[in-house]
Image (tube, rainbow, N blue to C red; front, side):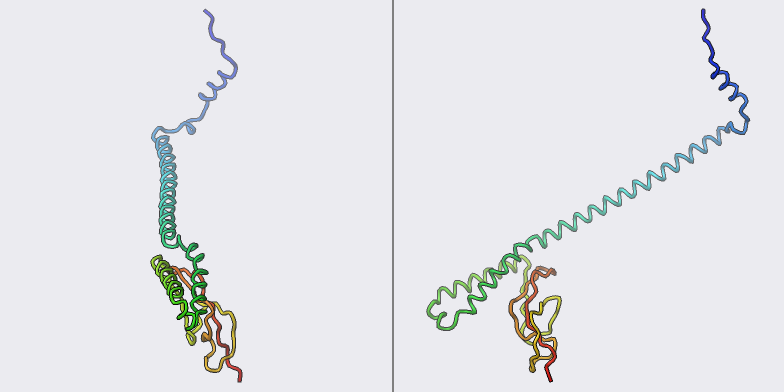
Length: 188
């Protein structure tokens, strides 16, 4: 029978293992402690990654809930904004009707008034409210847009002197500011 031949690398490796000092050979208890420490460090890292992933998941869930609530509240804001010119046109039509027109075309004027009232009711059902400033009210830059400024003696500076268009807001979001004229400091 032929004996397996040993290569030169095999006896060298065996000799190195035999010649290795005992300091490099670990005590089994110490080796077990090192393995346990490595596993504990890896477990701690995995736990940290898991906790971060769970926190990210919770934040994503909360963000999605908030987006869903806002979509339910403000989802119709674009449509409401598009209906505001209809309100403006109905208001102008009613303002243009003088007493003679109201008596001659009573049915038409009543129809426009009913249409405007219905439009306002529909907008109100969806959380849209009018911003209707009056002359003499203080100017609020969060609700009003100053279209011009003029010195008017009977009004203090910063008071509304004229309303061009009414404003609207949906819940707490401004759809359109009221366009107003504002009194500046009266000229002396």
